[in-house]
Length: 351
Image 1 (cartoon, rainbow, N blue to C red):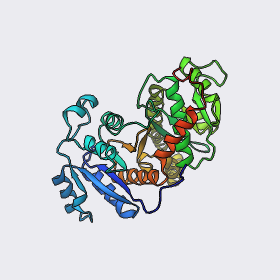
Image 2 (spheres, one colour):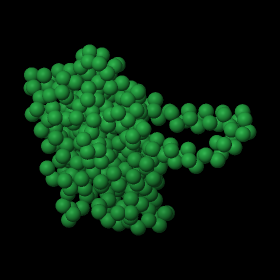
Image 3 (cartoon, rainbow, N blue to C red):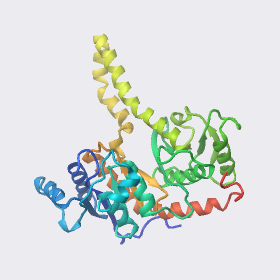
């Protein structure tokens, strides 16, 4: 298994310039900043050529217009993913996915319509062989650093084999991108004891027990923040609820701090003194720091960002795509799915 891509191979990253609430401005500013920050990749901007050129000109950006791929259509945020891929074949999302499929780009980054991005990546770019469902994860901060949660919304009603795949791909991502040597994996359940889960989680546990993965068994919701496990797998419906709940925590903390400060001058003074420390402590909760989430299981690199992505978020999405390429992550995921699938009883694989 290759550890890294040969240094003479440059990554090619396509960015959906029309994706996001502030397109094309934020996408172009962030992507070009990332491009100027590193000399390890080539950048392609996909979208309405005249609008992209206008942003480049008005902001005096140093970018070769030959690396702009024109896409006349835009899939809007509220459009149906399935129908939009059929009716808007000249959209930036469709063309970006085709670039990766046709090996004209190694990665595609977008903060556009999430459903359309997932559908285009899965149906146009295509899945890794032996992967039933791609997955997106969330990096949840805990007392020891980061816990990776899969799946957080790429699909729902997962089968046991899908949770098995999430565990394999999540462990490889945690190892390669998170630096965790032997990630501890758990299946989210109602209790740590066997028999506490539903049929899907119990069947997934049986599959994972047969592998050489560092599977520790059932874990509970509190374990996400406790730092006892590195990768937690669950159905996408459950994971999305957890993710949205977690995203609301910083807003609640700010509200509670303000409420406390408004009732007592001494508390207000104390909070003011510690404001910088609090901001630093909450930095890991800021989506801009990691930019977006990779869709694992795609035969290429696909990163999905928030619709409200700032230039900083786009920059970090692009840099993360480059890091994934340099670490040869797609090939490692492909090899690992095959390796661990061979370790389980084929009679149980479909649960």
